[in-house]
Image (cartoon, rainbow, N blue to C red; front, side, top):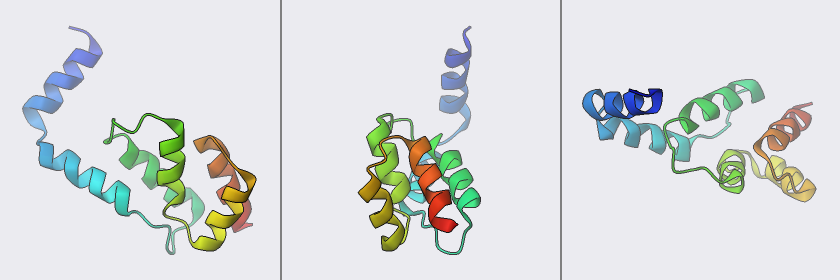
Length: 96
């Protein structure tokens, strides 16, 4: 059995669909609020693992920066960051 086959079997057998739905909901509702940039990034990337249908880089970027305050979002969109890695770097710059 290949690793991906085992993971699919394990998820199907032991993890409920509701579990993944709750993780996806948290991803869509995450806001930076009072979190520092590293904590927000870590939480976002952790939740993103449970939402496999978000594969496009642009969708990841949009989802990531949707949790920012408008002032941060305006700065990042102005610079037109196209990869999640670049947006994470821009977030660090906004905090500094």
